[in-house]
Image (cartoon, rainbow, N blue to C red; front, side):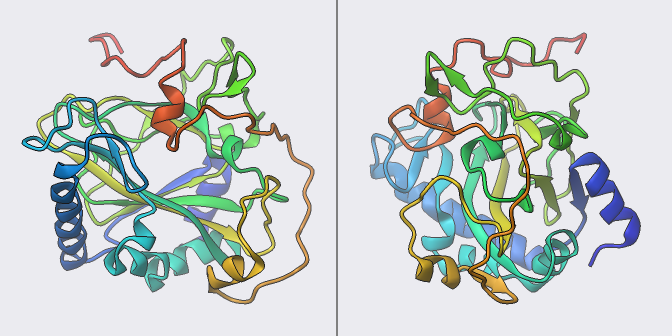
Length: 290
């Protein structure tokens, strides 16, 4: 559960960290399963439905950027979409009727981990209202040196930025007026969770440290938030993802800035979309003066 000060801080800043939500045993179990998936990727030579590969990935030195849809890949991951401690926290911010949405496990291996350029999740999947957030379960201590999540406090109250380049959605902000000078790194011990609003401006630099940074992300939304871009999911699919409370057939509408994320670069993940980006900002390490 969250206290009043934490709820107020989330509303004002658009993000929150909560320490020690998972037990050490749970963290170790997640690490073990993740290591098993990395080992399975040795036979993979290109991105597929499960694995998003780092450049340089090989059978002898497997290296992943992402495990796609882990909740549907293994029951250990799946239980965190319905983890009572996590849902208690999310309910404080989104209300009693909750649906889990997207999920992925992003990985930044020591000395390798790819950057994720500045973006807003809202640009990918706008809904009828913005009671959506992303929970990040921290598998490794997230420090300023290993490519932590970076956020711009308060940016969830602002505009929806342009994520198109040459008329194609590329999964990153392309507007030259973007000025993320107020960005802060989010640091947290393994077993803690981050929460960030769907309209929050965020990204991360490469990992140039000697320790990994892995995070299991699970998106949640209010049950009355319905996607504006058809996903192909059926009503049964949506209702099966209700993790607390009751489903509804009455979407709650809110007047919000929306840009449609179409057409998209062929390919699956944000990494593949952002590879086309010309004005990349986060792919280089920090300079001594930053």
